[in-house]
Image (cartoon, rainbow, N blue to C red):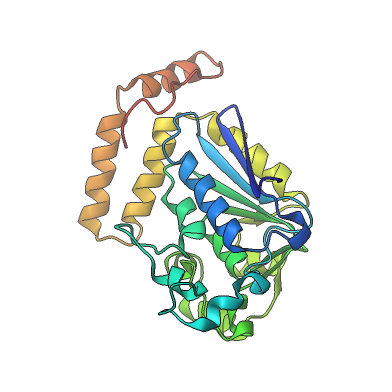
Length: 273
């Protein structure tokens, strides 16, 4: 059977691709499991400096495969019903249904989503879990859950709030309207638009992978922890992370490489973040 999610590694870049091409990479129960497994497999891999997330075929991800989730209507009390998984959680903040999107936000390294074709519903929420989104101008994006009489429930509350004002989030959630990649950029949902989003994402990934992996991981940790924190928390974390970086092998190598006008030779994740 063809892998539902593929991962290839090269030069510090994990190239992760959804691979259910006959269904626009729609989210069946098996796809949920495959995406979670892919994200978790990268969590403690010191080789990985940056992740590029994309979809094979004609779209990024069409969202929930309603044909695969007909058991949802049986209700949360049914052990076999699809809604039972919504409330399954462990000591992490997200439940099992939220994990295919939130797993990317929780990675220590940057995640770049390359969006083409469609990113609907859960597919859009997975893209929102990335740190950076590059979309084709004619891509189609939608917070589409209202079409099915549902609310977005794959961690949108923790991701969309950092990108758009509350009134925009409400308008998109209440209407479920489809927007182009270009409009999504104007609204702030995507970072930029490119004719070939995957090529642009890979180019950015190569740039990031060439920087100190310690500083990149520390930068993500700093911004994730401090963006909505109080001033003391953010300022103290800046100092703590900087002290750990100064004089470390990769920081010294960054300085030497710049002065010697050569590519740096970094060790993967030499300090704990």
